[in-house]
Length: 537
Image (cartoon, rainbow, N blue to C red; front, side, top):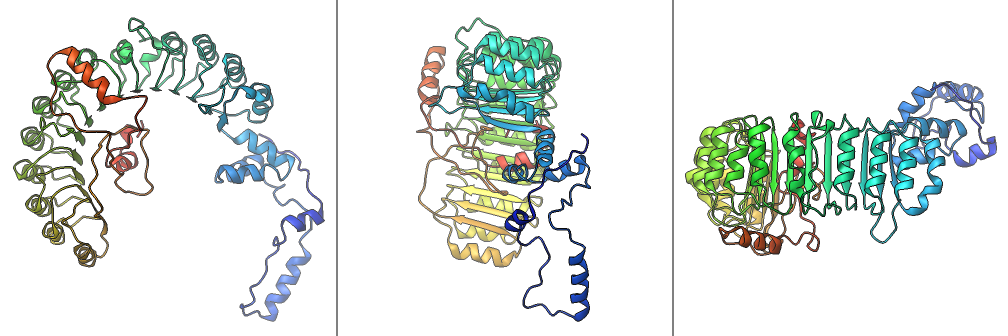
């Protein structure tokens, strides 16, 4: 990038748009005669209308632009032709409204932004999206793309995606949502984009045939993260999941069908995973025992999988001793409880983050966890009828490393909160929600007791729980616990037959008609403190 000339505005226009370009003293300042003389001398050296950035190389100007937001960069590009050019050549991220009329503008857009490597194309539901011709034209103009996000591009077909993959062979990250292409498109991507590292698919509506297997393809040698959400035939990706030998992160979220067979194959042939999310999928203890072969597993989310029980959790805990983060939403089925958590306490001493939702643990399991998991820093207890003052007092007395605690919809009182004032020396934040027995007075007392402690109390009416951990859930600003909302009544038990299980899952999920699920507790912490997930949330 060289240094180009600038087309400046006239001096009168310069004064109009930048009336305060000279330094002005405030009326309250004390001014000495010497300062007035220095100001007069400096004013004489100011050349009205001169571009003082003309002496800066384009590279320096581009570095300055990188510190600005999108709106400020747009304004800067209107200053002069040079700034317009530098902004276009130095902008590597671009997000476009991918409607059908965009086709005629593609040449001019990418003539200006010729260094784009990360591109997002979004189209709303009420509009007609770009088609294959537009996508192919973009791929020709931007052959150096490394990251592409497609949202609502319903006019794209398998042929267009295949041509796109052939032109953008350096692609490393692909994320598609609410698109109509299917297995042929995905196989083309896996065949041509050999450097692909992250693949995220949501509501891919072109997967009509359960016999259309996807992968592994050449890209399997580089894939590190696979995320599948709300897919009807997600098991078609089984060969890709099993064949990706460098795979570290696997997220299966609200995908229909049985997953035990896929996880069984994964546990036999691909055991290098460090992070697994299972959310509202049909997985039983068989699947949990299979993933227990991943001895390096550090992060595990088991959210609303009613066929999983203490038996599967025990198997995971006994074989995955490096576990650092464990999220469990038992959906109030009472199939996971003290028995499984006691084994976790004994076998997983490196546990740093524990989220228990819709469970009924007691001091029988919480005491060993507090005693043996000395690195536990983040704990969330939500929707439990057995978490009382005695359990909170146990946590306060034994969890010396605990920094953040969330308690929601539990029958605790001021006595339990007072116990926190005399324990947990490293505690920095406490959040109490929907606990009617806790008063504002004890919250104020706790703040005074520990001056630097952040105490958040919300004692409003009780609401049902949802502990889903989707990476597309609501992200909070700061280090707070996200809200947990209901998606319906909880299941009591699961029938043993495959037909009854599928009926229950289809009834409970309501993928395409229900509300979006909200991120589980501690999602923000996971994103901020866990590098292994970068991997979403």
